[in-house]
Amino acid sequence: MLFRRRARMLRWLVCGRLGPVWMWKALLLFVAIAFAGQLLGVIFNKSSVQPAARSIFSSPDAQGPSLGSCQPHSHIMFLKTHKTASSTVLNMLYRFGEERDLRFALPLGYQLGYPLPFNAHRVKGYRGPRAMEFHIMGNHMRFNKPEVEKVMPADTFYFSIIRDPVSLAESSFAYYKEVAPAFRKAKSLGDFADDPKKYYDPRLRNNHYARNLLWFDFGMDHNANYSLALAQHGEALIRRTFKLILLSEHFDQSMILLRHALCWPLDAVVSFSLNARQQKPSGLGGMSGSWVGKAAAAAGVSVRGGHSQAKTPPNLSLTGEQREKLRQWNALDWHLYKAFNQTFWEEIHRFGLAEMQQEVALLRTRRDDLARVCLRDGGKPVEAYRIRDKNIRPFQSGLVKILGYELQPGLDNTTRTACLRMIRPEIQYKDVLDVKQFPRDPSVQAQQGQQSKGRVVAAGGSFLRQDSSRTGERLVGGETGGRTVEEGARDWDGSHLTRTNQTLTRGQEKGRLR
Image (cartoon, rainbow, N blue to C red; front, side):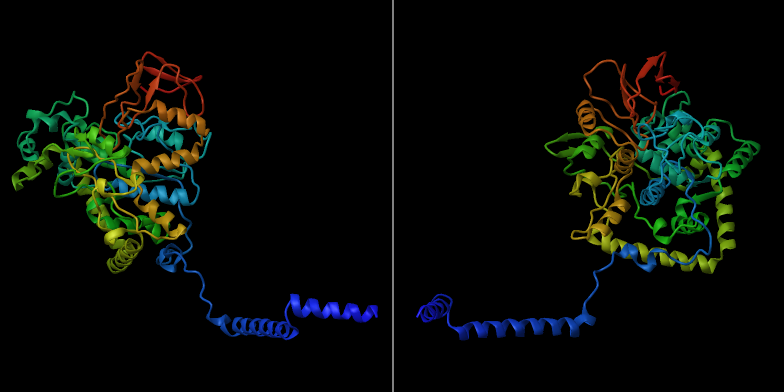
């Protein structure tokens, strides 16, 4: 009796509360069929599963033609001359070093003491010869070989880049018109070329931009009277130290020679032109953001409501006679250019004209491919204020616009990182590397950020005003992009900096920082 009662109760629970038995059987059958279908689908479709898309930077094309069994150079000194496409070259060095965690000989500010002759103590973190291994040095300096050799290893590869002095003068006049007194006084570049001595005073600061700028950057007396013997002596000094001198007019061929000299992959020397000026001037348009605001101050531009009004762009037109006069005025630079132009083409002939043409074609194809992937609008440079990301807006200085790039939206992380490195402007890139090499406590960084408000930092040779209302400050370095230091301030590692007769002393270690 008890058994029959429990059986009825069980049937009532199953059929009434949980549904009829046939429903459960149907449900189990459906689950079995679905599982079998999924299993069969995995088996039969396994071969059609597509792998995740690889970044263009990991493709075989990134390596380029084989370089044999050579080993890549990692100790490199690049003399960054002015207005020679040197910012583009420096970007390559920054990228190569950052990707391989190499150590840079970075400046305390943004240049290595320029325009003063280089001193080893201008390098951030320098503690004496061979105390620390530095791999790459490339920021602006006035070359001083004995001091450079204190920082860089004995097997360092030295190279630089030069440009036709007339083209260099055009760019310098546009960029340094408000900086060099000789240029500032002249109505136009042609006016200056007709009678340089009328405007040029060798005693005035920053006039080195107006005469034999290459000779000056290589560390020699740019005001010396020209003689063939002097010019040949300077040329010989350069040849003894620098293994390769590139030409900005033949930039792609230069990159192929550099690639083989350094044993680097092709992508290491593929670049987008950086720090290039706009050839056809127009209104500055809307300007905002930290870097562009500093740019406006540098160029003497008034910024109001996010818009600015620029001064009249410089007149750079030249007659054939004026171009020849500029070559005579820059006779020492003209000698260097002719001599190393000849050497450059001798190198190309030794390399092989056909081989050079093939590799240049590969480089240009690769650049086009990367531009399509990385850059908006097919890689066309744009004005700074049009760049949405303020962190990659190029610094503005002088009376011309410096153009930059915008990244293509929707890039995967790997590709975006590599693309960003290729277009990151020099000043911002130096800051990124500085933070990596010299990490600081976040609270200290925030405090220093507050203290630095109102100051203007410079690059590329422009000297900017400081708006700090505090007293006891001075510009350190006599250099563009110098830093401000107060009595009792601390260096990057916490060491006290004290001033004694125009000299800043770092702890017990003296280094004339001026």
